[in-house]
Length: 334
Image (tube, rainbow, N blue to C red; front, side):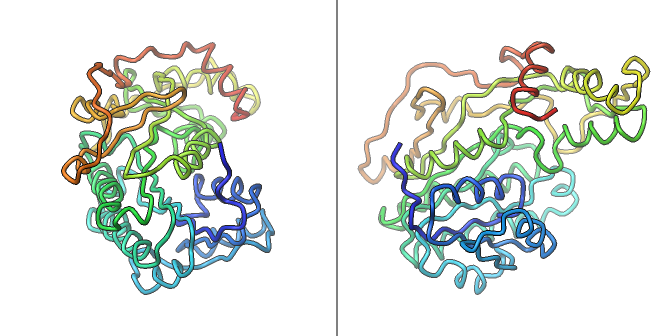
């Protein structure tokens, strides 16, 4: 695929997080002119600057809820990757208006600024929790998707907008693998929400590869979904215990599993698209592409799909423990 990043000015929001920082790292290999990182955490900026030490990076401390700061960050930018978000389900449930401020109002600020500046491409990071949402986090990310995917209409197609919709990202900050690893290292009990809980999983590099592909493929508000494997969380927990407990001088057979129940707003199983969305789905080698039906009203022809798709972690084929183990080793997660 053609490289569109060389000699470009790029803005990455939330660029010091697990996904954002990997986007920055991969973009640096394409020799962009500059990468501005808009991130509200000063300490996160410092950690990333110590790791990368690149003269192409411009660390902008700021909040996407601040329209003036967003406008300054967007000046003369060619490509935007929007990874800033409130993403933890329990925290969003407890702080719903803060989630609205970041995930909805912040996204609208960025889209408005991108259109005003005539940005070439804008890619937002979304989540499976935006599909039939049951949580504040999912509902705000659904609205974020809608803001981005519909923006190409108001921009007159001058800016190419698109989203990527992730499953769970292996070993990202605050995700289940670091939590399990810490529990194994520091104690003798693993907390599992439900023995039947399932999820789709992708690695951080795979997730970012999808993001960079989307920047090149997006035209009119498409949503890009990587084809992912599904697994049972309890199987993942047991593999991590078997692999990590001996490293910390512990007997895996003595590690206890405590079932704590599904948290408020959380689902036992996650879909990655709805039946209604699947009508506008096209399938590619390593991804699905959802086309925005709103564009039909404006004379844009989009694919109409008549095939049924069941992209639901509860009924998908689940990886065996042996395959989970091999995957974790192959991705250098354990």
